[in-house]
Length: 187
Image (cartoon, rainbow, N blue to C red; front, side, top):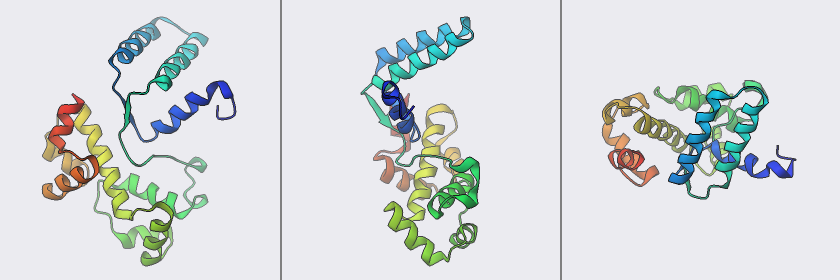
């Protein structure tokens, strides 16, 4: 799609969607809902046409917010060895964010010295490994706050935090609001 000019806006939408998108245009929501209702009654190529109609509608919306500062992506069909160190760090963090993450274990996974890995990662992302870990955890938290009825404490533990105070502090630093405020805004 990247090379087809007619699909450039859809390609850009899909690129943005790697960070999660929340659309805030209520008339768009109604149009997409109506389109989704039609999907139950059509088959074959008409389903694909409907999908592109939905993507086209979403790509033209200008009232949206990215839900995360990090984009999730998988390269080389999941072949960890074929990717660079930064991709391997992200791979590890996305698969272990609910656990206690040890720099030494992560460095061993990436096949780097811990100090060298921290320096390399910071040079290539302008973030520390643990800033990225916090963003991944908060991204998961935002999903749970939006789509579950779990308590905020349960969500904190489910997102890899063992201390509620650290969870609240990191959530506020990244999202510029408390988890309760975020939940109210999303609902």
